[in-house]
Amino acid sequence: MGRVIAVANQKGGVGKTTTVMNLGAALAEHQQRTLLIDLDPQAALSNSFGLQPDMLEHTIYSVLTRPDIPLAITIRSVRPFLHMVPANIDLAAAEVELVSAIRREYVLKDALESIRHRYDFVLLDCGPSLGLLTVNAFTAADEVLIPITCEFLAMRAMGTLMQIVSRVKKRLNPGLRVLGILGTMYDQRTIHTREMLEELRTFFGDKVFDVVIKKSIRFAEAPAVHQPILEYARTHPGAEAYRHLAEVIIHGKQKQQG
Image (cartoon, rainbow, N blue to C red):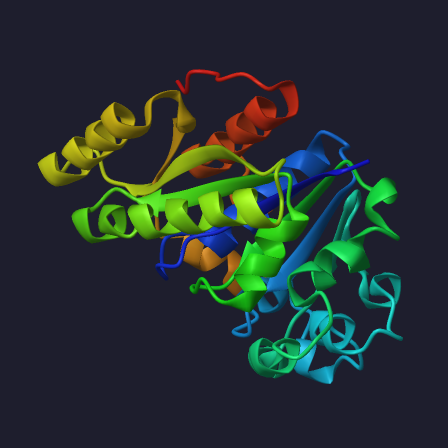
């Protein structure tokens, strides 16, 4: 039974999609059968793999709003050991349509049950909100991975996110836990960035990964050619960082980044 990991933060621009894309690619390099699910109406993950989701008949929106559409028919193979379920702008309507659904918080969890056994990992790319789609992700997930930029405003949002995780754990998904907090867009040249990372580690302790993702233009360039950074720049420090993160997640222990 695959581990389901929701990659979430209600603040935009913190590297959620970048993390899902590249962590997924890194897990696939380890021959871990991995499924990525795009839960963001902006469909950045789908577009990053060149899927052109607006041209697809069925997406995750179909699964969430139509009980007759099985998740399996929406899955696309994007790399060896790496599959994904795309999204498009239609997903924006799902928040409203799910309000009246029976077991509305469990729709994604129920849909995953039929295919979860096929995968070692399922990564959920959550949009920048804490609405019903993200609650569905938390209800379906075993773990939450939180990317966060090392800056003051991003840290301010952490309290609200942790409250939602706690509420979902209490009311909907008792097994939910925080897998870890991932510092992204880290620029060691600035005092502010270094201070914020230390503050994160002081407050959240070993929940903060030793691996940090350093700021680089390569992360913007790679999706433009529909590639993870692990393909676009195989030996780049960003690619190595996501490989290290994958090893930590697979083996269940921290590994210091060189």
